[in-house]
Length: 118
Image 1 (cartoon, rainbow, N blue to C red):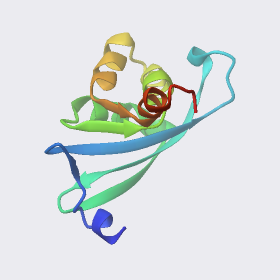
Image 2 (cartoon, helix red, strand yellow; image 1 turned 60 degrees about the vertical axis):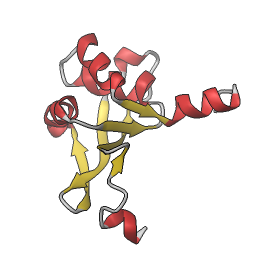
Image 3 (cartoon, rainbow, N blue to C red; image 1 turned 45 degrees about the vertical axis):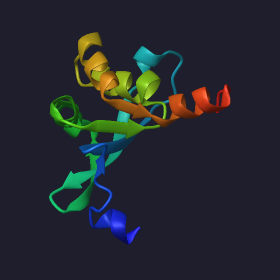
């Protein structure tokens, strides 16, 4: 953990990465999910930085992810976190696709590895 906090694990395949997860209201369908808050970690110089993203900060955070030149890591972000964050920030499908193209989704990884939903 000390190595992680000091930035020794700040890259994946020579690119920085950002890890995030969101919390939402209970939903019946994906488009009705209301973003409540998110947590993120990403490299900032020689250390990893932690950030709590509130509703009023969401658009700026989505803009940061869209401009981020690295990987975006999460669990079920391709089918949930990315669309909900983008839609709640006022963007649409093109921005979801940009995020999905740079996403490393651990849910998808484990599903392909085990051939099961986890």
